[in-house]
Length: 78
Image (cartoon, rainbow, N blue to C red):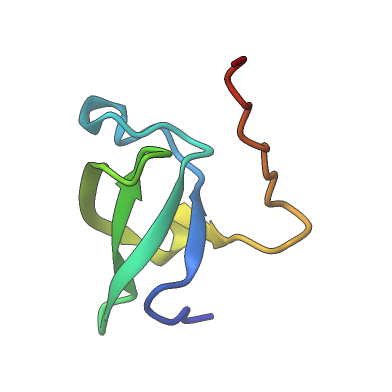
């Protein structure tokens, strides 16, 4: 299954730990290549980029509402 640009995906491998990204990281597809790879950007919660690189289609799975966990931001005490 080929995913579309700007889809959210979850990384399934620890192969990229040396780039600061471990299994379970959520990334955004930036580009889809013909050889079944995706260019993906992984970011921190504040939006700054950790890394971006191409991964095989088999190294990620789409993020769906069922497997997306949203953690509410905590308000700082006044």
